[in-house]
Amino acid sequence: MSVLIWILAASLLGGALSVAAAALFAFRVGAERVPVLISYAIGALLGAAFLEVLPEAVESGGAQLAMTTVLAGILGFFALEKFVLWRHCHEERCEGHETRPMGADHGRSGLLILVGDTFHNFVDGVLISAAFVQDLRLGIVTAIAIIAHEIPQEVGDFVILLHSGYSRVRAFAYNLVSSLATVLGALLAYFAFSGMRAAVPVFLALAAGSMIYVAVADLIPGLHKRPELAATVSQISLIALGVATILASAALADRLVG
Image (tube, rainbow, N blue to C red; front, side, top):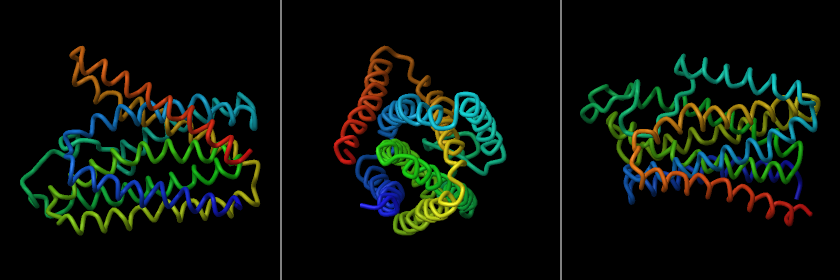
């Protein structure tokens, strides 16, 4: 199977499948179970960043370039989030998106989420493409980590859209359309990388920076809201499960591409 087919399949799964899974979870299970997904996503993101993506970026581009790019990426993602271009909201009540009566903001919060999510999905597509262009095994692991993060994020997006007055059908449809930006970003990046292979290590380091930033800045602080021992043990166990999933997916990827 060609690299382009792998990229298309992974970006579609990273986008459309995440939206479908998030909708099923939000509508059937309930948003109150999102913390379980978040703990697991933290492990998957950190495992992929430190065990797979960052080592590959160091090997292909050198330690100095990789570490500098990771640092610049983390600061850049912070700036983007500050300007509300990339807003990760994983729960019903969060800074900038306080819960209001249904439709009280005339859909403004929902529109903001859709714009930010579309940009986020586009960047995810670029990162998936960079990983696959470098190595099929790395691409598979990166896609799994991104999907693990996308599901709890999309659940949070659904909650915000519903509180902005969107119906369930419209919320699902808009999120599904937004997810197609993942495919667009992946395709544009693939054809761009074909003529600028030297840029791939930089984008791998940016991918690692993105995963680290999302896990540490966006997701982990929310876990501190439940400091009780039982919750802490559950969170640590789920984070470990996320890391284990990355290790298992890496072993599976070795078999698939070996």
